Image 1 (cartoon, protein in one colour):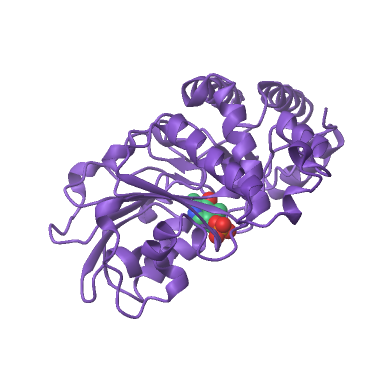
Image 2 (image 1 turned 30 degrees about the vertical axis):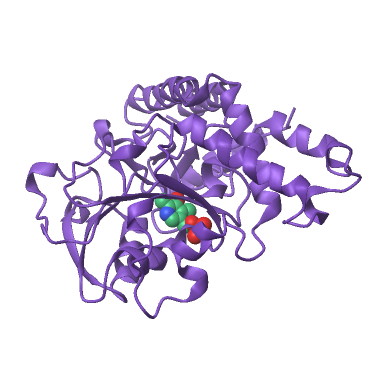
Length: 360
Ligand SMILES: *Cc1c(COP(=O)(O)O)cnc(C)c1O
C-alpha cells in the first residue's frame, strides 16, 4: 500500500488497485507485447480500450443513447470557451451561476463569445452558500444555463440539480461519478479527469446530440464538438494513456457497488470529517453553510496561519500529505475524492483530534 494518504485537490489520489493493475501490464498490455503508451490510437488494441471505457462510463451513469461521450484534451478550462462557441449562437446570451473561483473563470471566458447574465452569486457572503433558486434572475432566452456543481477551491457544492427550461450545462470536474445524477436533466456535462477520474490531460464531455452542429462560424476545428463526435474522439490523437487509466477507474467503481456504492462511502467519509470540525469547539472552523459543504473538498481553518503551518508540517510527518488550501483562500483543504479510502479519512480525523488536544 501507499505510504501516505494523499489529500491533493488534483492531480489527485487514484485507486491503489488501478495503479497496481496498470503497473502489472505496463510493459505488455494483454499479450500485445506493447505498452498502452506505444500503441497506435487506431489499432485494434486501443480501439478496444476506448470502446470499453465509453461503454463502462455509459453503464455507470446510465447515459441515455441520445448523448455523445467525448474524450477530449485541454482540461476543463478549454471547456470554458468550447461550451459557448458550440452552444451559444452569435449574439446570444448565456445564464451562469457564480459560486466561486471556477464559475468566475467560466464567466470571464464565456464573455469572449456571448453576453453573460450572472443569474445569482454568493460572492457578497464569501461564497458560503449556493444562492437559493427562488432568487435567480434568469433570462428566458438564454442559450443555456451554466453552473459548477462543486467549487473545488472554495469547498462549496450544489446539493441539488438546478431546474432549467433552457439546456443545463455543468462543470462537474470535481464531483463527477461521486454521486448519482440523472444525465437526462443536462444538455452537457464536462469534467477534467485529474480530480475524480484519472490522469490529467483528459476531459470527458457528455453532450445531448441535438445540441451539436450549431457552433459559431469562427469555431476552430479542434474546438468543434461535432467534429469530435463524428470521429468518435479520434479526429486527432487522443490522450491514450489517461483514457486507458480512466477506463480502469470506471471498472474499479463498477466493482465497488457502482456510483451508488461509491456515493454511500463518500457520504460516510464527509460525515466523519465535518463531524471532526464541528465537534472541535471552534479549534477548526469552516465558513461554508452546512447544506452546501462539499463532500469532495473540505476547506477549513485553524486559529491563525502559524498554527496552520504547524498543522500541515505535523500532518505530513504522520503521512497525511497535500493538505494545504489553495493559495487564493489559504487554510487547509482535505480532498477526499472517490479513491480516498475511508481509512485515510479516519487517520486524518484522529490526527486532527490529537492536534487539537495538544494545541487547543
Ligand atoms: C480543476 C478544475 C477546473 C480546471 O481544470 P483543468 O483541467 O486544470 O483545466 C475547472 N473546473 C473545476 C470545477 C475544477 O475543479
